[in-house]
Image 1 (spheres, rainbow, N blue to C red):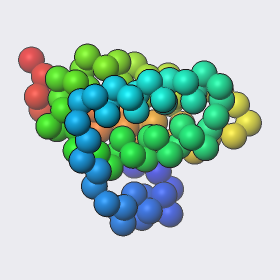
Image 2 (cartoon, one colour; image 1 turned 180 degrees about the horizontal axis):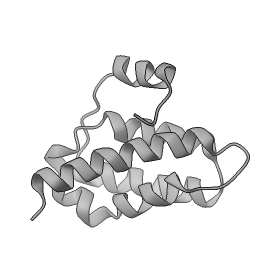
Image 3 (cartoon, rainbow, N blue to C red; image 1 turned 135 degrees about the horizontal axis):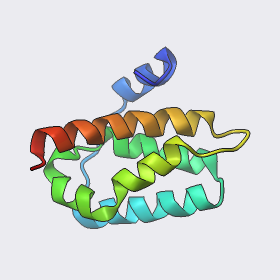
Image 4 (cartoon, rainbow, N blue to C red; image 1 turned 90 degrees about the horizontal axis):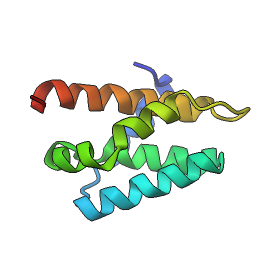
Length: 105
């Protein structure tokens, strides 16, 4: 796991978020903007929401939203305060990879 034990515990204790496809696209747009502005705090918050979301029910939306590409971009982001964003993004990439293996053709 890419997350520290404290981060993993916080995510485990957080409620699972139910989102719909329009909300998913809005979150992806917000994440792209936050990453473009090096707003690491907002990026981390959005990544946490996405990590807690039930993405299985939104698989087609996940594929068409560009979330995988954006998660990879976040996982390799550079900046003095980007480390936590990188870890959270790597965790999301792992989750999305698992979904692709399970549901992709």
